[in-house]
Amino acid sequence: MKASCKLEIGMGDEKKVKTVLKSIKVDDFDFVKSKVEGNHLVAEIESDSVSSLLHTLDDYLACVSVAAKIIEKK
Image (cartoon, rainbow, N blue to C red; front, side, top):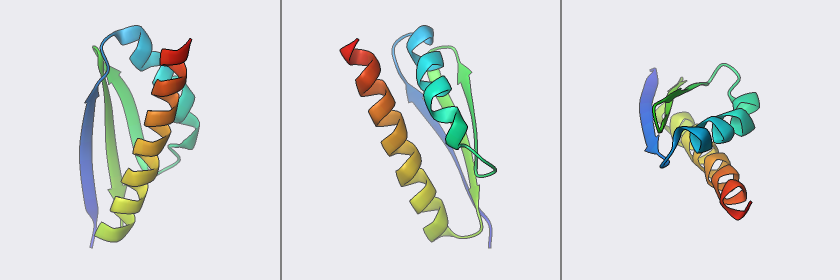
């Protein structure tokens, strides 16, 4: 069974979103397709199972969170 999710995260301004995307894009591989739409980070995630999708989503959100916190500190 295939599972998929589209995630949109509002981040305030486009510059911040682009910086976060640049930081996490290297980890996308074949599982995640990330892009910037205005001031939102948009990710489409696909997996072979719901449990794998949840694991990928958890990892992705953790990476976004860390990148956003580092940017806010600067």
